[in-house]
Image (cartoon, rainbow, N blue to C red; front, side, top):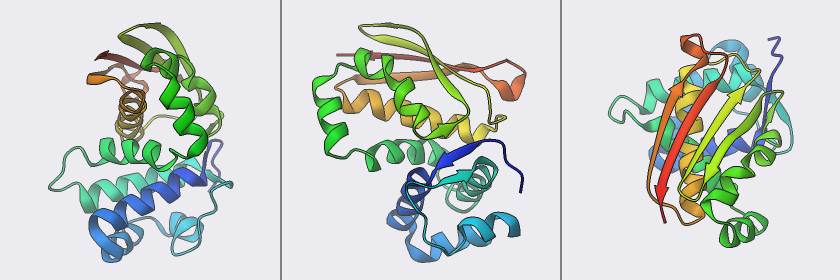
Length: 190
């Protein structure tokens, strides 16, 4: 596999924990079995290291398999997976960050968190207000709808952890359909 884009292992570990928590070890094995042989050789039944960078195409294959195995009765499984990734990374440092930051502050600074989990893609903050944000994902990796769904869930969870309520998120533009970026319009109440 020759991926030009990467994801931090902590995200893969979070998805693994999510699968086991919601479906047990048997479901996790089904997800692994549903991946390509190349992807299984990278993350299969191996220890996932949080600080290691993994090829993005392996992660996309992983998410597709999650959707195939767990998403038959749950159409928002990848949205929930993205939300869980944020919850999983909600350690002592981030608790402080979220606790004292408003939703506007958190989403305005989310580009810094993004770059510590994805490379070389970037998150651009187009605008924020007290009750809204417009965010764009640009660059590599080339898009796949499974990434868009998971990303939207993560963005919602970030807003929720910082106190936002009645959050609505809409992907208004998408690289999958030909746009140069994926754009997420997020609104909330305080």
